[in-house]
Length: 317
Image (cartoon, rainbow, N blue to C red; front, side, top):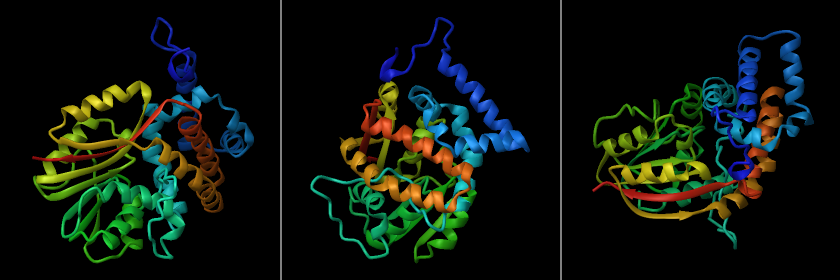
């Protein structure tokens, strides 16, 4: 066995799990995008049954990081999910909770999203954003952008996301002075050089095909003296690659800390509510796939799946 209980590759560079992934993703692509009739209904039935939970942990683990799965998620599942649950779910991160509890003061309307907001607060409050021009890359459904714009005092806050459905949702739902949303690519930011005092990125960069390109873009759009406020995770086999990319970036590391324990508590607190909201609003297929994804996170974070979750503060000199 390889690290974290994943079967080691054979001499040809592929293993049984990889072959299963290739077949599974090809089948999903055909059924979800082109399929109809009995095949599609059979797949829907599988996803919404407990059979989904029997998918081997190692296979679920590899599916989570498979590039084709990532492309399918970005192209099909994220827009679909945003349209279906956007009115009820405005955060998609693990969450954050301390021991003893953080007890961040929140308004009544923000309280249902406490744990996700606490992750944003921990990330964005590493520096004083009062009067600053701030960019968030991969703002998702805009919950974090709304919280920061309302509570941390930036002069302006721009949320960017690749998903057009997310941007449409954000523009309709989060109407605040100084808050705007733009559709765009994290690896090719549509802004001039030195446009922002701070860049925020929460639990998104692991999905970028060109992470080093993203870091270069962050440095480009930051003004001298600006800050990169960053939270994300990586599987243990790629942590060294992650660290090397961060070390090579044209940014100076001010601080970093592991928040795996806090993310575990946040995930524990968030899972039941998020699953209930998605199950109530989403199509049965999406709800079933979401259940599989949550079980992967459960293994990663709470059962020693080999996961590193960190919060960073960088500066541009």
